[in-house]
Image (cartoon, rainbow, N blue to C red; front, side):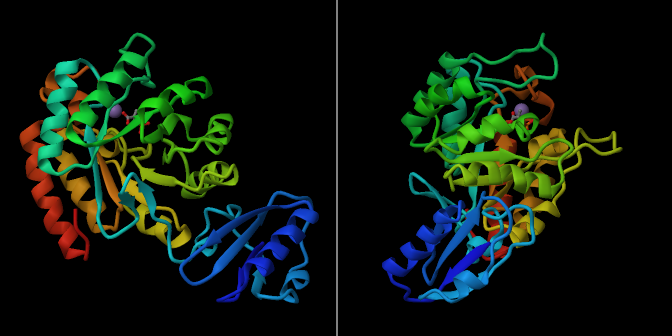
Length: 337
Ligand code: PEP
Ligand code: MN
């Protein structure tokens, strides 16, 4: 259930509603927007009688949410959420470009990447130090030394860091080095991990699973939100279909669908989305045209010798060209980069 407070409802009235919900065995999640406060009631056993709340002072409306996800639903924050990461806003007018290699490989590699992505206008550097690889014989990432290389390179160029956390035990270490914690597609339904990330005080970028519906993606986000971490960014990164000419099928439609259903920012990852370097720019342009709040792009100084995902990785020139194109598309849809 959502309790929508009247404009100008007092703190005391808001607190009364929260206390009532808690008294009835529910968890109360408060969202204070520019105009109104909305309180989401989750957990608890059995249904709630909305009439109990309609009659309380300061309450404008109390309604049941029919979707299975409550806090991820747009009703919870009708105006949308801006996830502010050190001044970089996901969900605002400016589109956030996150770029970097699939894997952090060497100091030289990541320092070169930091230079060319920062020069081209990206504000976040990516790079995996813990890699979920399909084969156990492939490069698994450098772990903490990789995180350190990534953080040092980012610091020198004033970039934010996004990197993947694969399991609960890694959370404290990854939090030390990262600004945004990435949950990979393979872990989208690792509910224990999601619950722990609900307690983390760092933004989480949650990738759509390889075979996950949009509803499942939103329910996974709900795990993090219901733990009290409201800084969740969703990511479309392609899903498995019967198509074999591309690595995955990038579901561009997921972007406007999520924007309608949820208040959370939604970004696109065209690199994993299509899996082939020559098609990445087209999918990145499509994501921005469809309203993505950001893009996550794999780049490398020498993609053909990358430790992982080289085939879908852009070189510096291709990335720079793409940034020029994305600026034009962003302007055409009333945004900027
Ligand atoms: C990655 O970002 O390199 C990655 C492993 O992504 P995904 O989880 O989408 O496969
Ligand atoms: Mn990758």
